[in-house]
Image (cartoon, rainbow, N blue to C red; front, side, top):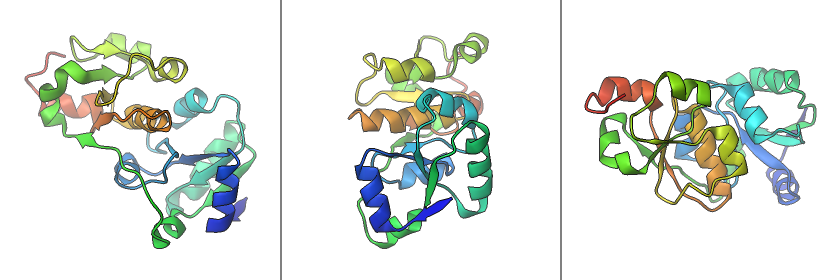
Length: 195
């Protein structure tokens, strides 16, 4: 596995190679490299990979150091054999510009009900969802995000798919928010919602 310097990273990413950030959603949302896609190793990693990178193309990986081996192994198991690693601390230490994704507490979800969209897969949606909200599964959203607008609020079961979707949409110029902890958190912290 190739480990990239900041200069290498800038050159390779500017050539069109995408960056996959496997850090937890709270770290990714707080600070990430503009244009990177957040697919948390803690979530449905393989499913999100298949949605966002179906062609198994060459990738640059950003990971927590202690989860790097796991991230690489899981990528390799899914057929990603051309992966370079970039230590995100090199980015932050050089005071490079970074992006953030706004998040909403589950307890405040009802204040945004008219803007909420569920990006869970269809099977999960059928089992449990917030009544009255629109369903746009992550896999469908990648191909057609015309129903998503700036300011929409995304959720899924635990917040991993919604963060992946939010990061993807950001690369398309659409800024959405994410509900921390997703449906699991809303079940506990937003009892007023009809689920």
